[in-house]
Length: 413
Image (tube, rainbow, N blue to C red; front, side, top):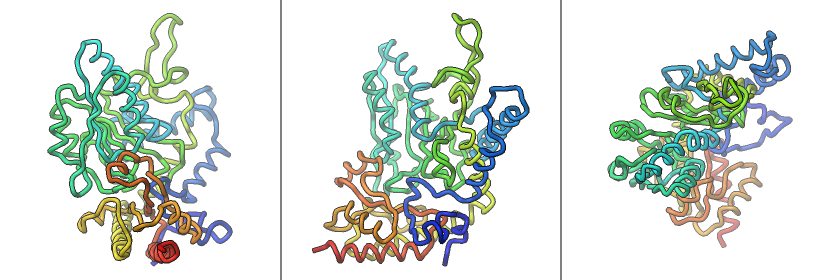
């Protein structure tokens, strides 16, 4: 059965890459024509700089951006449009939070000679490790790491034990880009909320399911990138709770980030613009909104059901290979949440395996997938990662398995 949405992606057309088997959606999703057309239309017929002039086109763009902010607030279940900050992506957002919120907290604690700690999990992408690691080193804070349980998710008991009155922030992924299963984010946030600890959720791998509600999660900050949602690169979103946004300092100053007064006076800061670039990525925002509309039109239930069934089939086929070694054994009941498979083939070099897959027209990720700490914890140097998108189908999975069988026959000498 072919994906009902594959026809929406021009990359698979006869004059492009008709035989491409793209299995790297965890890195970036391909772009549907709807999104590309919306961005093309903006660049050709609407492009100007917001809010640089009083002419009609810039006024229209100001409205467009605020309408996009409203749509994102609704999409995420935020209480207020002003809680939506446009960023360059998840990595940019996490660095912004480190500079704008956490660093002042650490400075204050150090001045008062109080200890500080930051809590993350063992399954984090490096984008959700390095900003906190750098601040911990600079201000003498402790970086505490939550271990994973047998299912590959955060161990709640051990997580709770790590929190204390000196915990300044908890930063965890909604879903790992290597293990793939969802963390119990609602419980994680509830435990932190009861201790008045700020929570930051990296939603890069979970946003594509289109069922994230920050109000239900009760998180303080939620971040994601547009290109993980079939949108463009270089654009992302950070939901930041209104009262937290008030105390955050500007990430980058200039232009739209402030209203200039006297040169020797402090500048009045506006939310959420104080955390945004002077000229935001308008074409990226246009593409992001179109991607949301595109996914919303197909219904999240239909999308999730399709990917769940395809994921179950992928894991079933892969686990039948006697030389297949998953990085983290997946429990049968978890498979339906799993559109990612990270693995090695017994005795084979992962780079060699990926190279042979590429020869067969199969695009996968290889290496440590920006999760070097997790790979080290699991005792492996690198792995092959396959990840599904809505353009994949059962034929792609069969092609993958057949290519892995061929690769093993060729290299397992």
